[in-house]
Length: 264
Image (cartoon, rainbow, N blue to C red; front, side, top):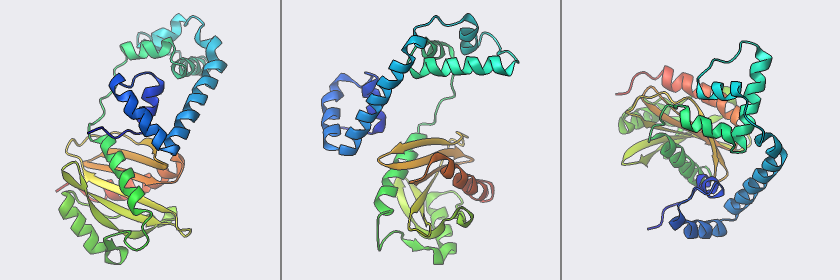
């Protein structure tokens, strides 16, 4: 059975990193999905514009002071202006796939990403696209039974869950439902603003108990901010820019992770 492709594979294809034996299936998937084809064309155009605009800079020799900072062999200068110039130059080199990316890839060590983190985001998007468009069956249990909803989902997911109050962010709780997640379970809370725009919160138990920090992605037309913290895996999904999602995520974090207590 062929695997499911996503927006990530578009970037892999543009970078010539998509496995050769998957190219035919990927091309067929793009042709069958107009939205993904439009994204591919936009990314390809952006890539060429960036390359054309910055090609001259990327071909310049990399200053020794910059490479030493990128590789961690030297500390940046305390002069803010000098350091900002180094950061800008590094960003240019990384953006066009120049030598700066090579040095970072060879020498920098990054914290590993939990294997559960990206699937949480992907499952959250899939669930949001299904249920945010429902008219009569948006949730299994309504907000009028919030106490029962919280207890039910806490017991089934295996971590104490309290539906965050996002009214100060402009969203009222509609209710929630139980969902599957990689052989386990997850909770989905649905919210709605006065215009009818819907936002969903996806929560599952994270046994790794890592703290990933917020991560953002846009996939299949949905914007998602997702993270791991304190035994919770969370994703907030809607049609909102990253800044607005971050403000709502802060409200969610304060109530769900800080106030809900430790996992069962």
